[in-house]
Length: 260
Image (cartoon, rainbow, N blue to C red; front, side, top):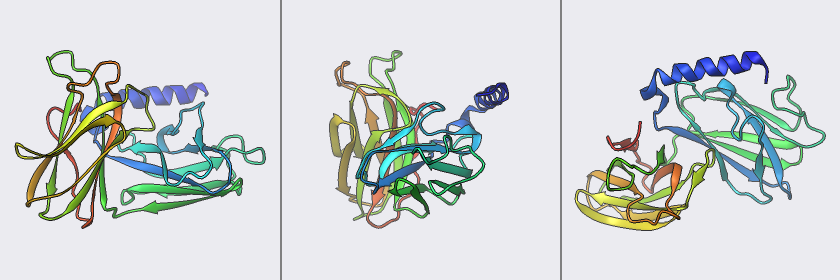
């Protein structure tokens, strides 16, 4: 990486640090990959603000037969993910880096806009990759981090809220953010209606719970480390999503205990 790029990134990080609320909007755009090539494929992507899903020197490994593998999530921050993206299949006959000027058969260019909520990449073979952008999903997602809170007797707990409709069937999923590191594996996911627990599950991520909502109104989603042994307690960035069979899902909103 040249000196100009280092200076540019340093300036960008300083700008984001001065705007913490905007830099943590708790919105993200998942990237999914389907691999029909019959073998493991190395995928490299570059987007706005030098975004590289697997790091500047790393590559995304997409296993043979992968079906909508959520290999990356682009967080919507001040350093916006919207704009031009290029993804390259790293094979001997392909360009050595996706930043090369010419996009050959093994590359795909696409433009991510504010109306897009997910990216689907299909690897047809060793030299062909197709990109499709999705909008108007029946799933609402958010992104945050769970870590030990040493200022309280309790461990870290994040509380979110959604607006629900009576009779709506929802599936709530808590999973690891694949674009970030983490420690441990277990957390607790709870769906509350006021003070009443509708569903609760403690397990290794990913965790999924489902329920039929009993009434119209606000519901709480709790992601917690409480009562989980230290050696298995999850610490790191996670993705929380709510899927509705009616397709009428509103944004997941953070409460004050979600770190901004």
